[in-house]
Figure 1: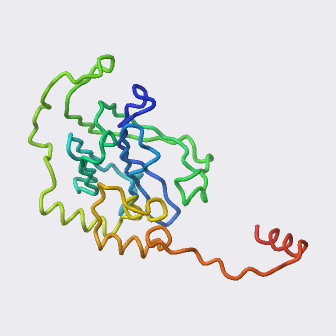
Figure 2: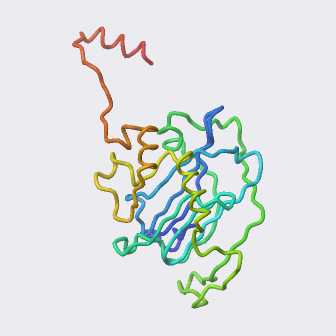
Figure 3: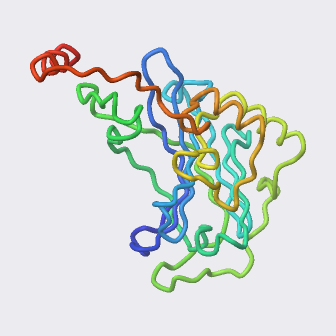
Length: 238
């Protein structure tokens, strides 16, 4: 969901992004939350899926209210994001439209651009079914909602039940591969809305100790070499 066309300099955005996979490895999916053009701040999370999303249909849902955002996969909550006073306009609050796109994110999506898209498999097709929207309709020219209170439906959750919270914790423990809240390379101090969990932190630290543990990459000892030997070494390593 986004309102980038109406608010080009301060748009809001909520995303499910499928980042592809390496053959034989889990598919990776990312959720994004941007508010008021805050893409530079970055509130992303990334997960390894336990299924191949290209083989069958699955249900992907977003609950977006004025106080919280919850992402679901097959009715399992995978991410909960609560609004805080310190966020201000960084919490998505302007009307958005729902859309789907296919685009080439090779520069960053696959291990920092290590694996590029292979266009010999084009064209790429995405199929959708059973689309359901609940909420207030908006006239983009007026930039105001047509209803003061969104219609209520029994099928719309109002939050996460205790049973769902256990399932969410299990999902995040097993499948989460990245969270901006624990990224010590980007944020020396976690953003104010982050609620840190010791088990999540330990799992991410084991997955990537440099990003999530604040460690430095081991570079080894540097040896002095002549220009000719250095050039040969660089050529042989490519």
